[in-house]
Image 1 (cartoon, rainbow, N blue to C red):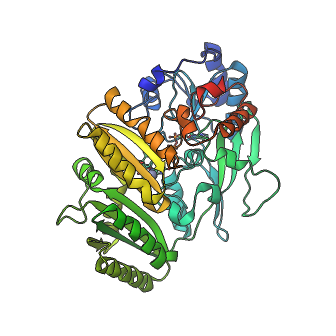
Image 2: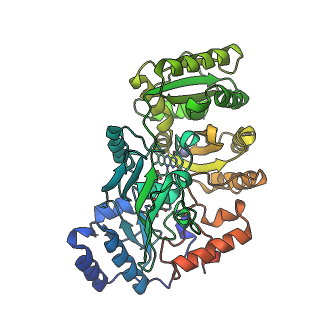
Image 3: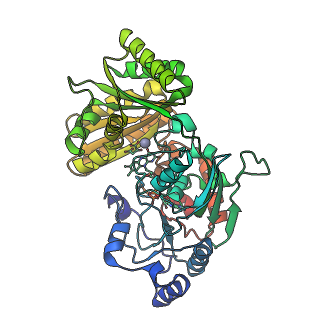
Length: 480
Ligand code: FAD
Ligand code: MLT
Ligand code: ZN
């Protein structure tokens, strides 16, 4: 990829020898040591097919002890490592840049315990999010996070990216719901921080370092997470707004009038809708009679079926009357509800199918958010399709530029413009996807020099040789 060609392989890292392979086979058994070219081809490529590594080795440990042995060995041999989960990350964080050893904890996928009274789930990091959702469903609980990649992403990957997703508005970020983490440091030290307590103010709460550090400080091996009760009444509405300001006002009204039952507030613009209708299998516009400029998906989750529905209907009626909403439909059954969600959750897939995609994941003040989209659209003119959607309820814009193929001229129109714009408004250049490879050298747009210096010091403390996910998260100049 164009990013990797700008980076030089760190010469202090060793390359794999036959002795290394023998050690790993001895430690993990043959089935834990993957050298198959086809499997490696997939693991060397990210979900968007934008970044490509050249790793010759993937390891599948089955226990924390095995992760510890692998890392202790890699550290002593100066072998660089990339932790990989479901490989659904969107910033090139999960793929090797050069020949790093891929460590995937996907075989560690056991549920360890579930406390039905408190809703606290303890599991291994390789559990796939959707499997955890299905397990909890049978227990009458739900995961506090949901995202389009649920069928492949692992809870360890979710924690390592501090994934936000579609329910953050209701249940908050993983910094709130993850109660404990077990992680292995670069030298093999196992950190048992697998607490199952809501409250524990004994010293620094170091588990937070592993939530969102993208595999740069350690490998997450177990997670303890607080899960909410599954409530019986879920309603989904798909609405149209004539302009962005109406979407924003609708959000304020939704918070005011739906308050405690509001569980999602997502938006997409007409460009995102059109692209999705064109490229996503099974996509149908829920409001087909005419095209609208903006669409909003609202979900409510509560415990009183008729009361919740009445509440939502009254809210929608008011919104139509005062002109905030120009059209709308309330899902009549679960199939219709999932077809509304299919549109929203399918946007990334549609973008991937449409060609090259430049992806920006920004936190901005809601009132300013769409100004950036319009500014960028004006800058690019007809050179590319500027598409906007995201978690409006969380102030998180997904600004995507879709083009037939990657080109330096388009990129130079977008960057650093988007980052500067965001920085000028004190926004974040990564709301939820992380920095990965894509934005490691852009961190200063959102963080002060002193803050990045402390981050580098923490990195050096946890991983003195820098073997864990090199070239990612922190600027290369800080890691030298
Ligand atoms: P990977 O992609 O494999 O890895 C991601 C990062 O975590 C890498 O840096 C990797 O090194 C590290 N990592 C993985 N596992 C471990 C571990 N056990 N220990 C230490 N480090 C580890 N993100 C959101 O926040 N919100 C969304 O709504 C959202 N929707 C998405 C929808 C789609 C269709 C796709 C493809 C992605 C979406 N994402 C979203 C991106 C998101 O980051 C990932 O889907 C998910 O959190 C990553 O999990 P993963 O297991 O695939 O991790
Ligand atoms: C989403 O909200 O759909 C995800 O974060 C993925 C994306 O931004 O494309
Ligand atoms: Zn998102």
